[in-house]
Every structure is written in structure tokens, then in C-alpha cells.
Image (tube, rainbow, N blue to C red; front, top):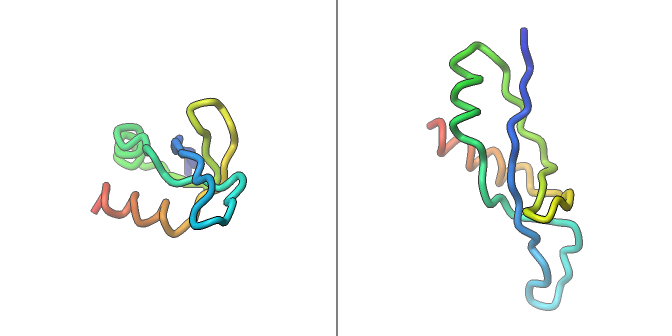
Length: 75
């Protein structure tokens, strides 16, 4: 069994309605090609609730958002 991690790009959520979400991000991009290659190769793909912004900052994202996006991609 091989477990693979797929990169997730996030965008800082910032301040919404006066609430500062700090180091929380929203999913901006998932490496779909890499995910499909890994799944087709028999790997178990791990999607973390952590990802990176374009500036290299580590951000937290809602796990449900990440799962929803990957489900839509792989349907």
C-alpha cells in the first residue's frame, strides 16, 4: 500500500463581516492531475486540512470543503 499526499493551494480568508479568520484559508486549487494519476496507480490519496498560500504561508482549511471539492473532481 502506498499513501500519497496531494498539494492543495489555499487563499487566506482574511476578515469577513468583522471576524478575522487568522490563518484560515479557502481552497483555491487542488492538483487534480496528480490526484488522478495517484488513484489510477493504486495509491491512497491523503488530503490534509493544511495547505499553502502562494506566498508559502501554511493555512488551515475546512476539511469538509476540501472533501467536497475532491468529490466533485473525482465524482
